[in-house]
Length: 181
Image (cartoon, rainbow, N blue to C red; front, side, top):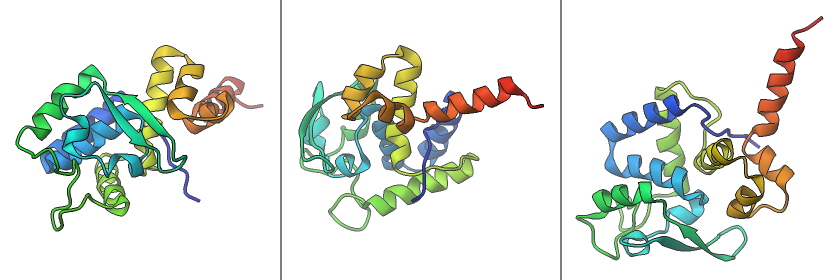
């Protein structure tokens, strides 16, 4: 199984945003919505305009757990939602395929992210990177692992820490402090 990482650098996040903004409104919005919703890509792709327009939260039935969850829409994302959806119909998929009247596939979302990552010099990127990036930066700002565990619907703090790559960061830092013999 291929392990993907969060995007730890805020500068790299901005670089990917700029790349995608020039490429496609849909692809840019997929990136920012995915990073700011903490939802799995399989829960993001089927969303329609009516699910997010003029809302304070999104109701999502998690594909992995089948649990229905209320996900807060961040204030910072509301302006982007408005701008992106202003010319769309309520029933339109947020991430509509250019060829069909269906949402893009998980594979297409992966291709979008991999292309942007390659253009920006990032590795170990996949669709789960968006959710992991949310988790990593939420933890860096708040240090509230219990709340993050609840948001990500994980069963333990250790799973959440490993998921967002904090264990790996801690190990890397310990090796640097050690320095060698």
